[in-house]
Amino acid sequence: MTILFINGSPRHHGNTATLGARLLADLPVATRHLADYQLNFVQDFRDTTHPQLDLSDDYEALMQADFATATDIVLGTPVYWYGMTGQMKVFMDRWFDSFSHDFPFAGKRLYLLLVGADQPDIKATGIASAVQYSCDWLHMAFQGTGIVTADGPTDVASLVTLPASCRDLRQKLLAASK
Ligand SMILES: Cc1cc2nc3c(=O)[nH]c(=O)nc-3n(C[C@H](O)[C@H](O)[C@H](O)COP(=O)(O)O)c2cc1C
Image (cartoon, rainbow, N blue to C red; front, side, top):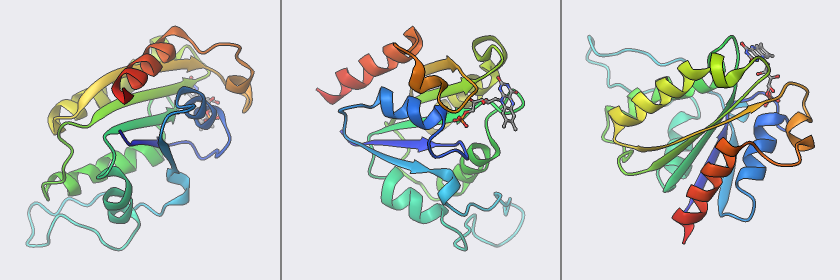
């Protein structure tokens, strides 16, 4: 088992990063912060002769070095305007490049972490739907969503225990690691 945690927050040590670290404690994980990568907007080359590919940024290296080799993917994003962050959206949009080149998405287990200040369990469900449907399209096995209400950068660090949705995901990760 190889776990890749992708943090879609611009904060390297904020709530999403802390949630990922707590969820994945003592598991074999590599953490990547999208804020450290140059990621271009996806282009739609379908009506051109250009291959559906952009080698001018860090996307392909991240996918080949880290995503391709992971069995389990944990995506973490703060809620921004009731959606995922721009960083995460741009990253996921680029999956279309990989999909167009037979990237081995199929069979990977994918877990989603959401952190928001304003009732994310009620108001951010669109993010979970988008990720779940994307997993279905790419034949990844969506494992569920861990949701935390938090705002200040140390709110998640201050929690005595993680919410049940997150504990459930950790149990799934532990079971997968056996
Ligand atoms: C630009 C921006 C937009 C935000 N929009 C929302 C929102 O729509 N709903 C919400 O619940 N929280 C929203 N928040 C609050 C963040 O989700 C919250 O502070 C979160 O804990 C940040 O996670 P981080 O520490 O990992 O960056 C927003 C924060 C920012 C900076």
